[in-house]
Length: 347
Image (cartoon, rainbow, N blue to C red):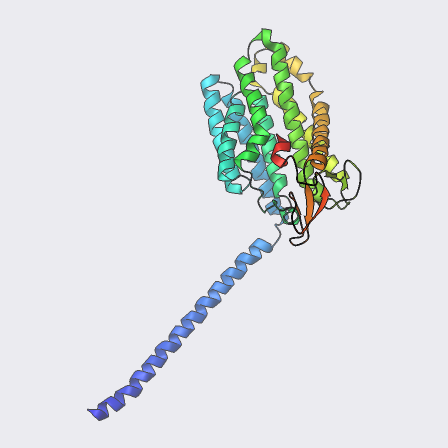
């Protein structure tokens, strides 16, 4: 019996060694496959898109925009029930898109649905203006975000907007849009309707001009200058302006004016009344009006930022901060802290 155990032990040891070697080979093959898959994934993410991939992405985006435009036109051509149902569907799609892309936080998506539904349901022209502002601003927020991420303490990758930020930008024009929708169709209220539409256009032209300037201005190669004193300041300082930023505000305002004008030309109500169609075609002055509003809004935002918002440089984090602290060197604004924050200025 003892001899049999002595014979079996080497056999068992040899079998165990073979099993261990086989397991090691399997682990090495698994690691190799994982490494190859990981490297391939990293290569795809790091590799810049080819020309055809860029064209395909551009074509896909254009197709989505055309589909959205056709859907908006159709929803406003078949009565109020279809109009508001389409508004709710469109607002849900926009909020969901912003949430999926990371440009909206969950609370921001909920607020965007309220703003979108109220605006899209009130008027095709006002709804198209809102959509143009939201999509363009979201794209510019994500543009070269890695370069803008480290400038300010609140700047983070993705640029997610909360419900506070959404409502500070969209609450006032949504109220104007809803009032317009209630009063629309009453000829004796033409002056009030004109004022409501003018206020809506001016508000979003200011917002778009300021947003475009805020997103593109920090990418300028020029040193920003404080708008009140023209003193050179760090990038990200409230009230700091550059030529690129001011040019972006002009383009943003003009973009909103152009969208507002073109949306008026394709409004379903103009298909019925020829006199209104001719009147809408002659409203090309809305484009330079949007340009002026965009520049004025950006300049006003910068003046408020330089005088009523606090800007300081935190030597520890090496970022622009909005409140005094032990390691903070004041740049501009009230010495004891700002009277307004970005949300209050936007409102």
